[in-house]
Length: 306
Image 1 (tube, rainbow, N blue to C red):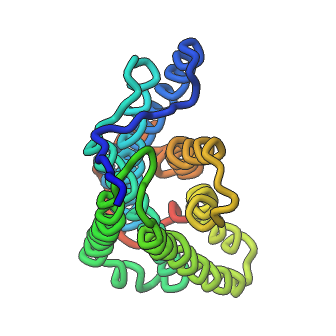
Image 2 (cartoon, helix red, strand yellow):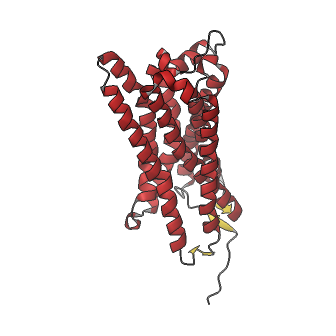
Image 3 (cartoon, rainbow, N blue to C red):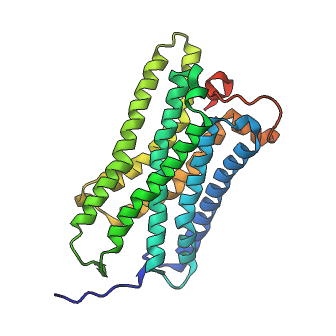
């Protein structure tokens, strides 16, 4: 058998070998990173401080923002360092830790979009029972369950990938890891997306039964932000994980991964802050603590502002 050596570090190719270009990219990516973290952090802060936003709907939005901040922080600081540093290497352990955290957070977010779709489904199809069905206990269990599933299932991918010996690239048969990737792809993309589509089909059927045009338009606007974010999340994810191997292109993957990791995370606070009157009110007037807190968004006018 041929003798195989185990690597201790990987070399990151980056976007360019030109120092001037890298400095320009550093400034651009730093601004994008800060905007993403500050935007999502603002949403989390406003939801935590404003008693009017202490509802199930905004609880899920807060969790989504935390996932986005964690995802972009997993990769962007490392990329920013390597854009200016002389050394372009990352340790073996550091590479796998980064891969695991990014994949686990991405898988968690993919599952969490199903939870948010279920929230919209219950709010529109069963408004009188919304607070009963989506109690705080259930919301907590749904959130904890998505985190547990995401981090557990990606351990499997990381375990099988780490067992491969490397000599430039993986030097052994990768059929098993390819099968694991396929299973995770189905679990990460196909299954959640199917559940989201099924939820919105039922939502659309319920909305079309509304005879008055104004309530119907308001009901459709409930789902607009969520559908926008879901589309920008699943479109690149579907291409990356479901495409055939014959269409693999490293350069194209860099561009798609950058959009998937940076611009999608930046899009979330832009969409939710601009379209949500409750978030804008909390930002402009400051968090309020007075007044009753209603746990059923369909009983509040603000649910129509999403």
